[in-house]
Image (cartoon, rainbow, N blue to C red; front, side):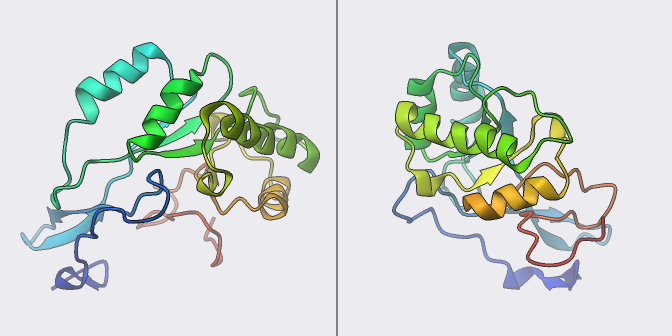
Length: 192
């Protein structure tokens, strides 16, 4: 039996992360069932935008991060960090616990007509800030999410390419493709 053209038995749950940076995580797969009761592989992405603060950090710790994937590994999330009100010590703690830290801009105010240089200022600048104050290795920060999911067209992709940013999570894709596009690397043409 297949689910989306993939045989379930060919989709093993990946092992716990073994990469050199604990903030980089592998895609967790869990089982769900289609209309015929056949188990299918499914990925669940947990993401958060904006600043990490004492209030939301305590919530993350109490509610979310005492849970395990079916493979016994701790669940992990991607945090898209913006500068205002961010607690960099808590951001570092999230990274050390195995969560991914990604970029959400310095100001959280970007025009859909932002230039490549404006985008670099916001995203590459945020990367520098996270590296300096949260001690996140530059090579561990690979992705972005534009504020309010509003990209600046080709300028966003040009900035990503010139800055070595590997993926974007700004596109809302559920209405446009099934299954949704992930992980937004644009290695292949988009239907959007």
